Image (cartoon, rainbow, N blue to C red):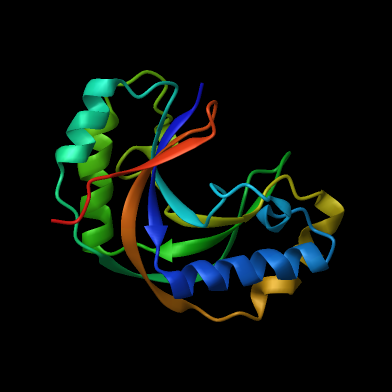
Length: 173
């Protein structure tokens, strides 16, 4: 089981990331562009656990949320054996505060990875997973010419990967 809490981007940033997914797909790089699932969307993961209990969902839903301006920055490659190409999200005080608040809420759940703990988290938007080593340069080239761009986090969703279900939490007040 994998459960997550994710920050959703405004329409313009969502469209820009989808455009970059398509650039990667056009270059023969596996990207989320191939997915037809409505739940496949650009996002910033702020919490993951093997299971997020209903009481945690209720606590998340009670949290107030206000849109957060962010900047989507340069490219990063995570991992060696199964590389993932991502676009960094420049951490701001507001973004880090939201991450900490959500992390503190989800922390009691089982299976929270160390990479999502405050001080360890690298905010990002995934562009391509499992990029073949021989395709890394081409993948970077396909989207590296793109500049940093502003975005706004406009919502928070809960994602249940096993059930392929999403729902909003921490709605704007």
